[in-house]
Image (cartoon, rainbow, N blue to C red; front, side, top):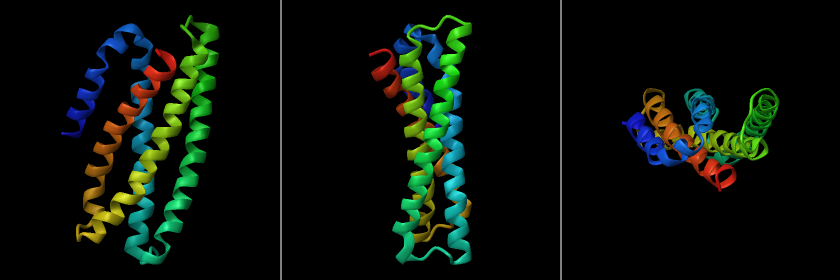
Length: 163
């Protein structure tokens, strides 16, 4: 279901893909980063729940810590991708490489941050409503991050690259 919704999101940007086919190359990067960030954050949260190290009183602290780490990781990944786009533009012709680098960099920053926050929050919410987060996070995290990842990517691409 999640993959179908993600495909629908991609399909809704068909005109933008036709206008700039290069965008298709960044869809797997975006979805992969979202998945990695979300699953990593969820693993930390599930470990905290399982070991009893995650208490109700320190949830805000842990989520803030996860947010800072996600921003840092997203900034690094986004910067590296932007530099890669600019380097590639020296070897192959790319239309508006600075705008493409900006769009892809900001996309990775936002996707990584949002995915990590979803990944850190969903296990806590599942635990609170009595669902074993270790059994359910993969489905929730992967699906939501795939959909959010491609949506954010195309919003950034249409705003900064095609806009």
